[in-house]
Image (cartoon, rainbow, N blue to C red; front, side, top):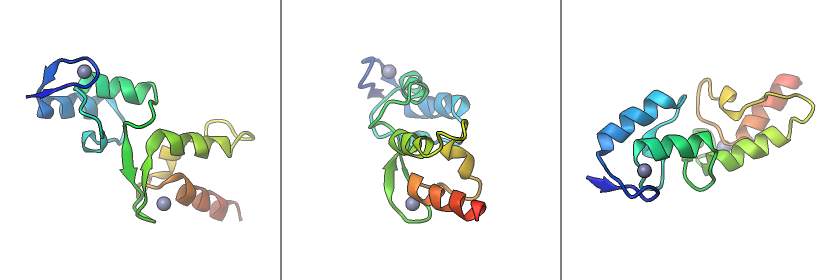
Amino acid sequence: MKKCEWCGNEFDVEEAEDIFEDETFMLSYQSVKKCLCGNCAVEAIKDAVDGVYFETCEKCGKEFDLFEDEMEFANQFDWFNGMVLRDYWKEQILCADCALEEVYKDLE
Ligand SMILES: [Zn+2]
Ligand SMILES: [Zn+2]
């Protein structure tokens, strides 16, 4: 059993994984870098808390904070609401820089 950093409850990692992967889209509990129970990890994603969820870009290999990069990505598209970094994860997980490259490639 592990102890959740946020709520202090003890939890089973496998159970946390199940809860997390049921509730989040395309995300993996393995990428939650804090020791959080399933419910707190889901909350962190829903609230887009920085410093919790890190992915590795499959293109450039950079490890990035998902919500920082999602913000950075969304900020580029004031003119087009609803652009979401995760929409660009069709074939691989991409950081904001690499996703932007893809976007501009599409525009050309
Ligand atoms: Zn918790
Ligand atoms: Zn990248």
